[in-house]
Image (cartoon, rainbow, N blue to C red; front, top):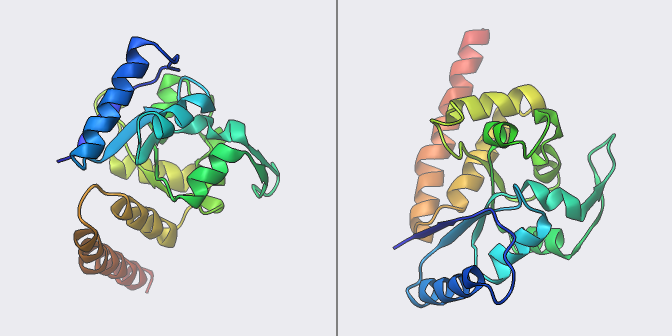
Length: 201
């Protein structure tokens, strides 16, 4: 059984929504549900903390405002320092579901090249590409991959890593994740490499 909770608000303690989150977290933990929560898009990094600490999120949707907790070199993209939130997410390998096109449409970012995806991926955060929605943003996984290639110069090896990150973060059993990685993803990308090499020759 898997549980999906989606929200964008900065929740106040003692509010009805806060109590609902605490109750939902307890139910999900008792039933061994997995939880993903959309946070850090319309509201600041505090909403990401709330998603993790109050609601027990195992994955974070969007999470663009994590950049508020990171100081980085704008020329190299190297991280200079991180706050407690960013360090916690990095250390605990909490996946961030990156939604490039959707974040542009909702105004979470002003330009695609400003998206924190590049910095997070470069610095070993567990990020994966997602559509958020396909209808409203008129996008697809293929389009998200193409967008990442265009704006962040990712290559085929990067796309494979991002796909593996996604499967590592999937809400299925560990042995099933490993089987999919080694039986489907890795052979699939190897076949694609061979096809590209053949075309070049």
